[in-house]
Image 1 (cartoon, rainbow, N blue to C red):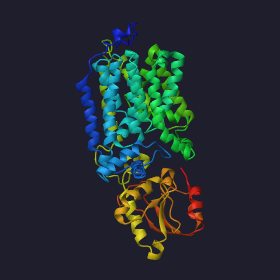
Image 2 (cartoon, helix red, strand yellow):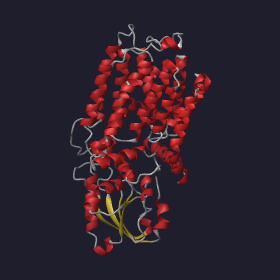
Image 3 (cartoon, one colour):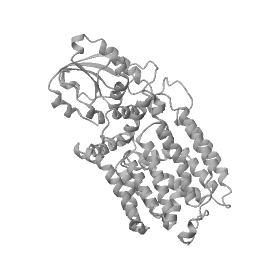
Image 4 (cartoon, rainbow, N blue to C red):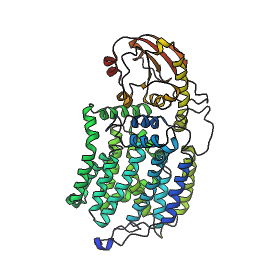
Length: 505
């Protein structure tokens, strides 16, 4: 077993069954509950984020797979949109629940490692105050579910190491099966964990039939999504290349940029605690495979130019390992460091999340993308609707509405019907799969962001005339503020031939 002062004791499995400390129910519940109250209080601010709009649109086109994710989050969005159409606070409830539950599971991981009250509280605080966790709790996203899934899986593995009860491995497989319906990243964890365990143990895990049963269930339940990917030419692979390009353009495509951005998502408490947990995992033979997995994940995502938060799922178990190492009578200095770090983290949290209602006038998305890109979508749709209604009747009958991105197309999809707009189309990402403009639409009312310089769409029409400009009426400098709305007339070839060439990620 692992003692709270960091020493490994040579005990039998029977002895370790009674080794855990009592669960710190009250303080952990307070931390989790406080985070839940904050997330619930701000859940209506300021509106849908662009990706959330897309998930709602994807839910209305429910399928076994999508170009950029499996079907779970679109399915959750469909449920929320059915229960409370247009209510962003209801949409975000699953993300809040997953985040609050993650705080508790992270603390339970510290308990499984032998951590007492202090270790459990530190772990819970590190989880609750990490920016990557909080943003995932405020917005409904694939990360919201994926991070919770990894937290549960690593807790089950740590518990299996203590108890050697193979049913825990079956549960880990079942959680993996659910997680695979949200994001495919957990595959990287299991592959790297398998390789690491082959080298440093515990190799007896491979003798568990329930481990392989759980793996089989995970693969079987993922098959519909994988078959969708195979049937559509594996667009997820194209998305990997697109993400790499985005990261390189954004400055996180190299090791330094990745690590700097990763540290920013981890938080004031999370960075040193995670590093300490990694060091302890290296020193403790039974957890060394987790250290290898953590380092390998970061290396893999740096090489692939993945997004920094992709590696966040391994953090809760490292935080727990670090917190347990700080749990002992010789660590009297810990509160003197922990409380100021927690206070600073709370201040940073208030800056990361829209805790205080405020005007976003004059703020741009380079400073506060989370809030800035969550306003103005109804106004975008209003301007498009006004431009559409202003068209002569004979022109309007032959005009399709097309957005340059899946964000704006999803906004029009949500807000357009109540404004009398017809179906919207977009050649961008997953929205490309939701429909092709009818052949009768020889014209296009096209909205593209002020930053979009792609003229591919315009090149296939005889004439382009700007008929309106987007104004969110709030003075917020987001991606569609000042965007042109253009009427494209005289399509030069059938949509059946043109639409596949317009597809982009």
